[in-house]
Length: 106
Image 1 (cartoon, helix red, strand yellow):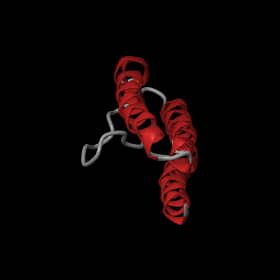
Image 2: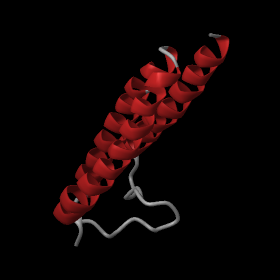
Image 3: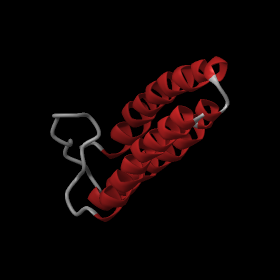
């Protein structure tokens, strides 16, 4: 039981990092990047772009924490968390590429 709780706490900490990234992006004055090690694109409206990315990061963090709940229930439910995170990552990439970047890129 203790191992499951520790795993959930670590899982929530990672979700919290995404929530912190959302807060940083919300107040940033320069365009924030979504992809790792790639410079943010030139955008038409920096404030709206950053707010959209912040909402995406915030939603990602909240859903990630929610997907960690099955870790507390036992080993059979962990597969739900793993598959859910894969689907969430793909959905975030699709939303960024097809919605946010397309709308704000110069």
